[in-house]
Amino acid sequence: MNYASRRIWIIGASAGIGAALARALAGQGAQLILSARDGDALEALAAECGGAQARPLDLAQPETLGAVVAQLTLEAPLDAIICTAALYDPGRVADIDPMRAEAMVRVNILGMLEVARLCPPLLRDGGQLVLFGSVAGYIGLPGGQPYSATKAAVNNLAETLAIELAPRVDVRLVCPGFVQTRLTARNTFAMPAIITPEQAAESVLRGMQRRGFEIHFPRRFTLAMKLIRALPYALSLRLIRRLR
Image (cartoon, rainbow, N blue to C red; front, side, top):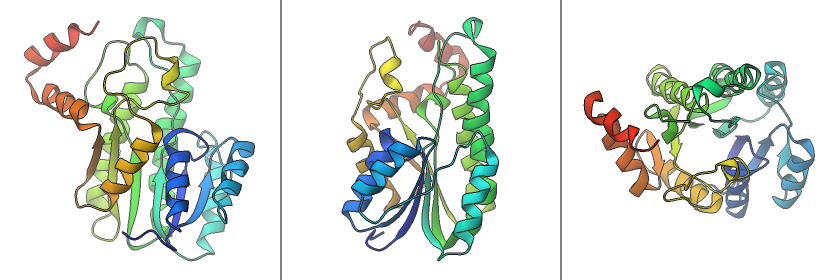
């Protein structure tokens, strides 16, 4: 896809991979619509990406998504919708804060379901719906809950949409490994094969231009996780136990 003059909506654009995608696409001449909870950060990014529109919303409050969708319904069709929005707060099951877990479910699962329900009609025929799952959703990891569970749900949702929306909408699932963001900065363990948001954005855009459903990176990490996932539980769980 040549991104010059393409209309692209990024949900979760104010920081991390979303912001890196916005800058990269703006540099290629895309017409951007940027959404996130942090209105101030969003306005600053929109100014940086000259000509971008800032449309704040919060996936924890579905009516805000609905309001932006209603506005965009009156405008020209979109070429792509990219949803990177998510909350991150992994931990041991025994230590879960129920309120924080509920917030993650509300944004990461229910919010993504609302994106899946409301947004596809905004796309032109052949347009792309790009949902961010995670390698964390491949298999249950020690200390990964409840974030891993919500991302497993997103991975599953994208698989369903790829069938239900075909052939009119080109659904893509993005499964990043570790990326240097304000969220992963909270991790207290060594993160293998960690990359920058700019490297992640480059991988996403390259994947969007190719055929194939899943965009995963960095491959030296994601392919190893795919191999573990493909093993029988007797072997995969034995390997995962060594990560504790």
